[in-house]
Length: 110
Image (cartoon, rainbow, N blue to C red; front, side, top):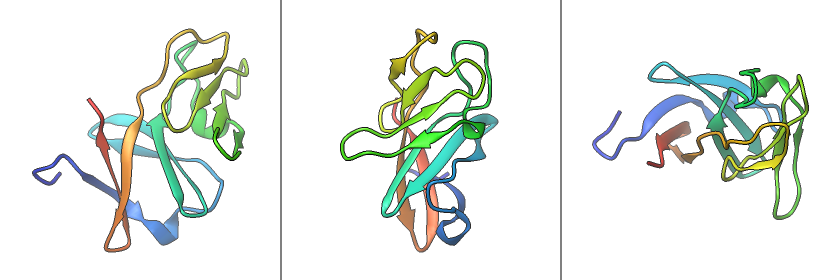
């Protein structure tokens, strides 16, 4: 982690387009996904029953991109972590994402 809180996760070339992957940020499970030039990172566990969100279906749109829980279908906004459809009631954490020297980096927004 650098002094501004950025943590290097993986090379950008190792992140397939539109396919969520699981990564770890200091022991916390994080979903990372790329949509062309846009990158997203949110908590990887559904707040309903803890299912791994990286195994769910990601959908990309102009102003709204989501991932659906593979168990009960809750949808989370990839940019903010907000719940877009239940049964989940609580958001997942969302992280800042950037590319530095070809490496994907994230940091906690809090």
